[in-house]
Structure formats: structure tokens, C-alpha cells
Amino acid sequence: MKNERFAALGGWARSGLAVALVSAGLTASMPASAQTEIQWWHSMTGALGDRLNSLADRFNKSQSEYKVTAVYKGSYPESMTAGIAAFRAGNAPHIIQVFEVGTATMMAAKGAIVPVEKLMKDAGYKFDRTAYVPAVAGFYTTNKGEMLSFPFNSSTTVFYYNKDAFAKAGIAKVPETWPEVAAAAAKIKASNAASCGYTSSWASWVHMESFSAWHNVAFATENNGFGGTKARLVVNTPVHERHLNNLAQWAKDGWFLYPGRTNQGDAKFYSGECAMFTGSSAAYANVKRNAKFDFGIAKLPYYSDVPGAPQNTVIGGASLWVMSGKKPAEYKGVAKFFDFLSSPEVQAEWHQATGYLPLTIAAYELTKKSGFYDKNPGTDVSVQQMIVKTTDKSRGVRLGNFVQIRDVIHEEMESMLAGKQTAKQALEKITSRGNDLLARFERTARE
Image (cartoon, rainbow, N blue to C red; front, side):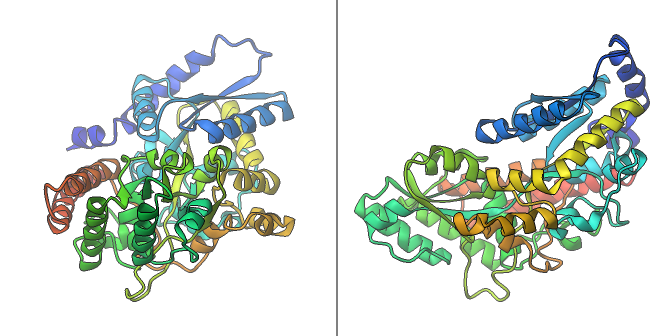
């Protein structure tokens, strides 16, 4: 069982002692007077990647003791896989950006990571967990109250629409409910205001995870996984079936275009091909850079007859995990960099430029005080959706093997959209296959 657990967790904990020795060797060739280099692996490209590199450059220019080297390692799943492989080989970076789906797996790999709260305190920095937006901090905090990773880029799901296409199609009211989205898509298609009415990135995140929280319906038992490793999926419900049935029908009608599993929907929107789009609030940077039309941002649509809806949407994006086995001086550099990233000014700028949530209350207040939300209507939608009091069903989803579970969800949704099975059959398979993965994680995590 022990070996099985290590296999499931990518062998992270097993390599903990070895990595310390190897990492020491990696830095031994550096001259004594050289800057201490901090390796930061990330998954950001385009406008977001430019912003991330700018942060590293500004930190490097702000002091002379440390140099943060930002390295793009592929998509979120690819960089997480690369991080696991590097840890096994003993050459992991100091910091890895891991998407929220990998959070439970990272938390279980205790020997492989250094809790961010401990890192900051050891380096002599004041770390106040309450300074962070509660829904964000809570996601990366254990049941014992320790914050494990640095919530660098947290986002949530929002609704974008093409104002020019709406005007051409004669749509005066921004859709608030899913039936209104369908009606708008039909008008857009009929008027040729755009070749596609509606599309979406991140299908599982938007249409299963956020959809559940937004309607205050459980995604999994054990408070969606926050209560422990015995969690099991409970998405085979009438409201989930109704929504998937609608997506399948809208796809048949030519109103909905499924573009792929990750952020392929972003380009479908900002190119003008699709007039409505659900995706990450952090798509804002690329939409703003690339769209040749006037656009708006609104809250995620919902079904108005579902009790408790709308509640709140769930967190997305990624956090920064600090790997174990490095030298004390290097950890001081990581802590100094995180202190730089945490400043209200840097956080407010990052939020305003990218669409990611302001991570701290101070950054949110600074942004509001600057008049940014008044000048850029819709940019506070993500905040409005997240600052409400969460329920046990809406805090988020934190499950082991969640990367694989998302693959299962996408596979079954794609099969449904291709007409090979009904929504009910897709949900039954998602539940059954997902619970097999959760049972496997439970067995390995308790060893």
C-alpha cells in the first residue's frame, strides 16, 4: 500500500531527503558573490505571461540579492506533470504554479512542499491569513488552519458578451439566466450577427463545478472534499441533467459551440466568432488585448427556479507551491518575492490588468478607491460573485485525483455532445468513474 500511495502522489514524499542533497549540488557551482537564483515554473502565455514576466523583472530590479527566473513549462497539467518528474529526479524548481485542480494532491504530498505560512514566518515576515479574501485563502488552507500555498492567480467563472453583435441582433437585455442565453443565441444565429451564439472554455469548471456552487447544489460529499478523503461525487441530479440536456440540444441547434477542454473558447470569443462566452475572469487580459469590438462582462447565468440560486461561483486559477529540499538562503529569497507579490499596490495592479481576483482585502479596497471599477464596468463581477458568504456546497471543490476526474467529465460530456449518450447516462458514468478515482485516492492517502 505504501508504494501505491507514492505512485498516486507522484513519489513526491519519497524523494524528499534525496532532493535536498541534489539541490545543494545544483547550486554549488555558483560563485559566492552571485545572486541567489529562484526558479519559478509557470503556465502563463500571451498577455498573462507578459504580466507575469514583468512582475519577476520588477522584483529583480527592486533588489540585488535574489534573481527570480520565470520559466514557462506548458499548460497547467503539463507543468504539474513536469514538476512531479523534476521532484523525482531531484531537480525541482523552488516555486511551481499549480492549478486549483491539483490542490488536494499537493496537500497530500506533505514531504514535498513547504507550507507558505511556515516559509514566511521562518523568514521573519508577518503573515496575516485574514488579510486575504476569505474564499481564496480558505481554499488553500488545511482543516487545521494552516495556509499551504500562495494564492497567486485566483479567478472565477464569468459571462462575456459582444455588445456589437447584440446590437446587430436586436438584443437589448444582457442574459441573466440560461433560458435567456438560449434565446439570445437563437437571435444571434438567425440574424448572422455572429457565426456562433455561445461558447465556453473549461467545460467541467464552468458547467459542473461552478454550476453546482452557483445553484447551491453539492458536487461531492464531505463538503465537496474539504471534509476529508472519503468524498464521493453526487452530480447525478435533476438540475445537472437539465443543464447538460440543454447544452446538448443547443449544440444540435447550432447555438452552442464546444471548443475543447481548456481555454480554447477564449479565442472563439475575442476573434468575434462567438457572441457569448463563459470562462475565466482572467480571460479579461486577452479579450481586452485582442477583441476588435465592444464587450461586456456579467455574472454567470443560472436557472432562476432553483432554490438558493445564485449563490457564489468557485475559485479557479492557480497558486504557488514551494518545494522542499532547498537551502535556507533560497527560502529567504522566495519569502521576499512573495512579500513583494503580496503588497496592495502590486496586487491591485495585477487584478486590474488581468481579471484575476484581488487576493487581499487591501488590494480590493485600493482598486475600488482608485475608481477602476467605475471606469471599467464589469471588472468587479468576479469579486461580487466571490465575496458572499459561502455554504458547505459552495466553498469550492477540493478532491484527490481531480485532474483525472476532470478528464472523465470532459470525456463523458464530449460523448454526450456527439450524440452517443444522453445527459443522464453521461452523469451516471461521471459519478461511477469519478468515484472509482476518489476511492483509489482515499486508499493511498491514508497510508
